[in-house]
Length: 330
Image (tube, rainbow, N blue to C red; front, side, top):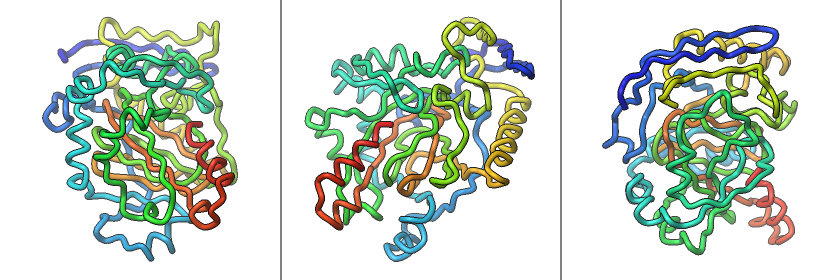
């Protein structure tokens, strides 16, 4: 992409935040990102989740310290899924699956709307960087609702993390998203989420107390602490010129807004900050049952989640299995 100069003026009541945008060039790391663009996103940050190399994790350590207790990031797994990563390259996905229908969901907490399009249409029209003048209920993202019968050869290439999946039923959800797209705060059963290509920012919070959030905010709005746009709103104006990626590269004030938002959330939670971490390709985060979490893609990213059902493995109850998996697509 060529450099562009752009400005984004965001009117936020009662405080006006002016973001001056410069140098809108996506970093050209095509060989490293399998055809998906990488961006110098200002929304990256520190990691407050335990990070453990997968060869140093044991089943006893996982079960005793993490499975029912807290998140953990497994690192160093890139080589385990080379074949699957190659199958997730942009040109390969479009060649093999571009004309197949996929189901898209709106990028708000409850994914109220489902829309069917071909993968090619989605990549062409819905993977540009998320804009601040786009409402959550009109922003579409592909994650889950996969046709596992049709896509079986694709899913068969995936090797899940080696902990917590061998003694449980597992359901996979696969997707692709553009920069600063994501899924806002939601909750469901436990599992792993692995980034195959790109980077994904995660926020996680225990089941109680329930975090404060607006269910119709996009992940980008939530990350910045912005009130979500509603139908008919005219309070936010974003002018990014001809380049949708123009506002991705922003000054330090963008980060300052995130820091203020982080401090405000901690105040609302009685001084407890959410856990945060960026999950790169070849890394997977474990989310325990009932933990709230939100995600934000920092690049054009491909990712897969392994939702596990320990209760069914223990009791053999089909009703319990249906209850756990019914929450997956929130």
